[in-house]
Image (cartoon, rainbow, N blue to C red; front, side, top):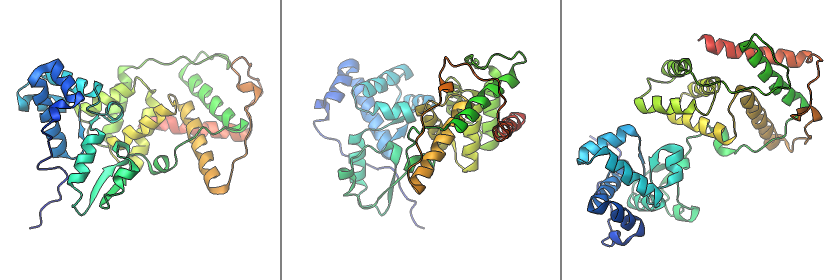
Length: 326
């Protein structure tokens, strides 16, 4: 029987002078030999998994139990490792993983004789020069293909597109409130509710998979960033692509980078992406400055929207309502 493909390492190089490394020395200074021992155990776990290790509440508790060290102490040592640069702080913040450029260099060197090795683009810390010598290495992306290959730039919206976005936002608000307000007022952010938690988790369970405790926690955290309909839309897109939470997480991260918080922001995000895609395939897009009525101190006109804009708004609202009824 053929042996299964191996991702992790059965051993890894450990320099005899590792305790002279400033990052290790700082951890040992804070926590003594126990800090050094836990750090080596962490490296063993990372290399056993590959070049990185997902680190959350579940992993923390299981790791602490296995090595017989208090959860609070292990957590403090990991925090110190992030603070002193033993692990990448940015990758931990964005993806919840423990890794570093040094860890990755040692890993990919160790597996250089394997036939095929893959790495996740968003986790990858090696330079192009470093990675060129690994001919067996293929890099794949967590992000949706369109977002991974063509980073979204700020695309100017023409007046019709922006009017559609702004009007949609005001009508969505109006459908939620019976007492209408003037179109010049700023919409207040709706507080997160328990109903939002239930709706998000129910949608995730039905459309993607049964959420783990860690996924539940992260989805709850995302509700502090986005309104529930935005997360529901991200779940819908994840389902359409047959993906799991990592894909959803990548979408929400991109929304966060582009300051998408409401459905109105999402409409503008999609329009901007569509226009950039058109620019990439059919030449430069006509540049237009924003009209005066987009200014915060400009009073909206009472004139009704044209037929095309009205229909666009109705279609968008119907799509939103149908999702909430699910």
